[in-house]
Image 1 (cartoon, helix red, strand yellow):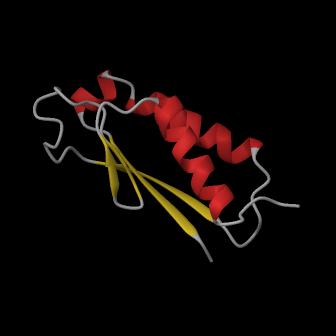
Image 2 (tube, one colour):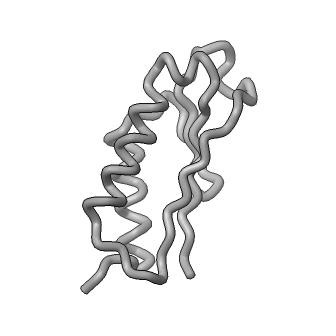
Length: 92
């Protein structure tokens, strides 16, 4: 079963810079897309791990281990959709 693991920093700086908006966008995407039963998108809010260097690179998002600094909903949604398509996760 293909899994897409999305870690979104839920620390103060990242939250202030939009990490919760990114989570909401991913949740909306999952609801809108017809994912096959073989695929799973896991959204994991994580505590601050200081990767944003005191907010300089907030928000931080990791998708299957690939880190995105200064992430925005559009970039993250596009990356997830690319993975969904590559993995053949859409219902036919």
